[in-house]
Image (cartoon, rainbow, N blue to C red):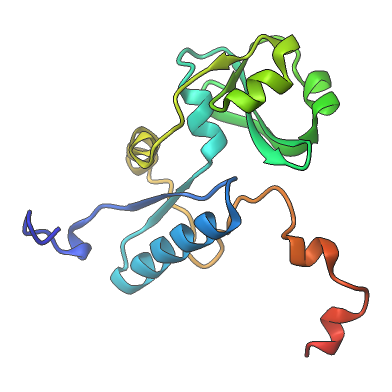
Length: 173
């Protein structure tokens, strides 16, 4: 921004991909975007990584975007055009049951191999720049996220939440 002579306040919006993905990566990216938004008063736009994978397929038909979530599970998103119908954490069998019509789109060879029976289309891993068309559309529509309320789109609880011993949350206070 220094090179172009822009100031943070000159931006129309700050766009961030808020997951699902690596807990640390999502947390750091989202925290930075929220901090910049709060400090500058520039509105925030959060975009799902599953939406970016679905958009890589092009077209406006039903798209089932699937990402590896580890532990034999998948991050799953069903989209009609750019409209999110559903996002969830599913097992392989649940993904197979959810895929009715449309195409399955993935960006990881591991997911292609695990769901080969669904004939998934392999697309390039989305980059941060791929969120720009979503952000531009949302700016035009005046649809911004509440910086205080936007949260990481993990679709899964953290290991600390999953493996916490009963009663630990009350003893930590």
